Amino acid sequence: MAALGSPLGTLRALLRELRCASGGAGRSYRDTPAYRHIASAFRAHRVTSEKLCRARQELHFQAATYLCLLRSVREHAALHQEYHGRGERSPEEVAGLVGFRLPQQPGGKG
Figure: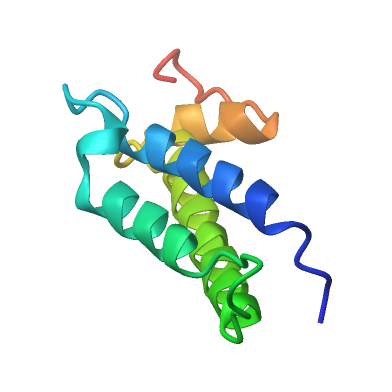
């Protein structure tokens, strides 16, 4: 398994992805339930001098997994928008896409 990095880096990346996901929703990403849940979970599991957090690594792993999900969904949407088909194409257009020209029919019909 790859190293997770720092929890602060994971939190920042999660917040960046939430900002991208909320996009133009008209309200701040800080008003979303996802932001409130992530912030409270990281606050509840931080290590202080008074307590030892045993679930810190588990929280960090779950946060990294959720970050991977958010990134993958965003990248999938971008790829889908770029490469999604535009319906059926004419034979001439398909031939032009692959670099061919259709033969001309005798009599000037094509």
